[in-house]
Amino acid sequence: MTTDTERARERATVRLFSEMLGVGLVYVAAVFGSSMAIKFFDPPQWVSALLAVAPIAPAVLMLSVQLRYMRATDEFERRVSSEAVVIAAAVIAFGTLAYGQLEDLAGFPDISFMFVFPVFCIVWSVASVVLHLRYK
Amino acid sequence: MIEHVPDKLKPVAQRYAREIIIASLLYAAVVFAGAYATGMDLPHWVIVIAAIVPILPALMMLRAYITFVNGIDEFQRRIQSEAVMIAAGVTGFGTFTYGFLEEWAGFPHLPLIWVLPILIGSWGVALCIVQLRYK
Image (cartoon, rainbow over all chains, first blue to last red; front, side, top):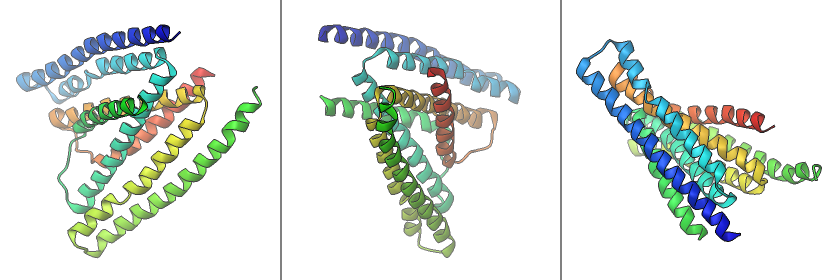
């Protein structure tokens, strides 16, 4: 029984990793491609806007890969990964709110929306590692 | 079996509602007090602390939610975790894309304060959709 669940978990992990890597590379390529295109061709504003929005397509694929992984793994994995996401979401939500107020009230420098996602990913990874270690 | 589920869920949900209401009231009070305090020409560090203090009731909300999620059954937990995942994805990729629009297409700068409403809003919508889909 244990080996079966372990094998299933391993299979799901390998699939998550390979699919995520593939889609992630497409996403990175799309982001770089659109930024290069905007920089070099200097297109009209609506074309720039379209190019900036285009990487959303691989991003949606990344989200669906993650959701499929969560459905394929066992309860334990799902619990750990969802707890890590909740922690990351909370850190981001309340962190940005606090910083937004610092911007507003205390004159701190403006930070672009662009940094929300990288910080989210970092917090999520750290939380996953810590939770895995804690549950072991 | 079916009758046992709401019985078990009820105290958990009630406790969650109670804790969230208390934490939210505290949160609102602290935020308004902080905003009010900035009008009083206080030293800079006091304002910085006033802007950070709302983190404490926010942590109470997070604790209430984690207690709630640990108290519900596997099926409910699955719905919750999928909704959070979707909301995090929408917010993450959405803000990232908007950051590019700001940078390259000259869209106006949005303060970070809007990330929380976007996250909570997409979470609520995702929760409704996931719940309807599993019914």
